[in-house]
Length: 312
Image 1: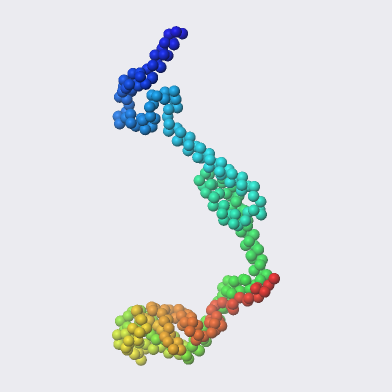
Image 2: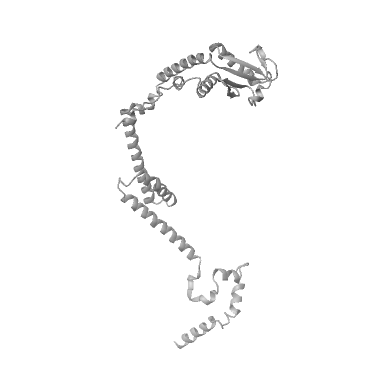
């Protein structure tokens, strides 16, 4: 017993600051046995004065604390997600408002993806089903409202059935042609071109067909003073500053004649159908036709009745 006491005292003296290990004798020997590149400075960065804290024993490995902190963070997230889950499951149908879903559903989705536990995924799917149920109820009631108020049904403006839509297209096309015949009596088109412009060669036959069908006046103006191939629009005139005055930057350029000015119709090639649509739209903007006349040329029924405003 006495021998053990003496041995314990000797070991304690060696480990004190004034012992040989503290003075660097044993410490240098230990350092020499470390891997190359490992220095006392690095040891001090991780665990300063290791030999002064021998009482820590096997718990000297400080990086374990980082792992513990990460585990605490995960546990904290799990507790937060558990609170979200409990909060969601305790809500009633009345509290599941659209505003609540808009503000909170993304949070539950994030929780289910970031921490994919059984409860987190179950909670999100539960909320998603609630949202889909609300959407289905809204869609069903919307159909019932439209059935009771036909003026709200878009199918009355444009039928979905192919035979009905084709009939509506035929009516609209007939109205366009009638209106263009009336327009030809009070307006015309100025056609700026160059004889070497390939796009002008494409546009010219379309304008010729429009002129022949609706007797629409078309004045061709040559920027280079030369006629078009195939002698289309043989009665052309030579540009004498009109193009510059109208700011023509490319050809073909078309202008519609209004009551007291020329209105740009297009700069570039237009198809036959596009040309008719542009003429009607510009004519409406300068009051050459009325709104009712223009609406009759569209493949839609008359505007929706406003009687819904007076409904209870």
